[in-house]
Length: 106
Image 1 (cartoon, rainbow, N blue to C red):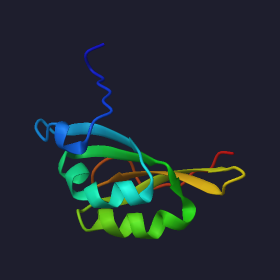
Image 2 (cartoon, rainbow, N blue to C red):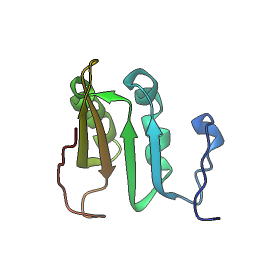
Image 3 (cartoon, one colour):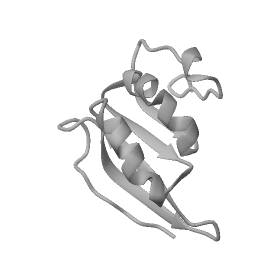
Image 4 (cartoon, one colour):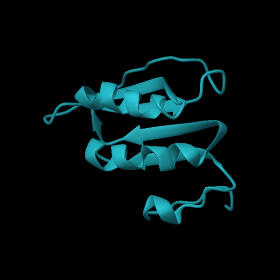
């Protein structure tokens, strides 16, 4: 029970230390990009950052922003609906965590 903590707070309220092995963020691109650095600095070595709330057309811009902080996409979930194609990418640092792969679910 004490291993998982959920918070719906501004990034500044999330402690940077100790670093977190898993960060999940359900934010639109316009909300996510300005705080990408703060999110990346809170991710532990070997940790995973899972994003949601992103349309597929946002993928390249989001990937470029997180690449600036040493994070690369390692896996992606995809879901289509009436609005468009939604993605949920998982980021990590190269050489840390599971190998790169892409999966799709509808």
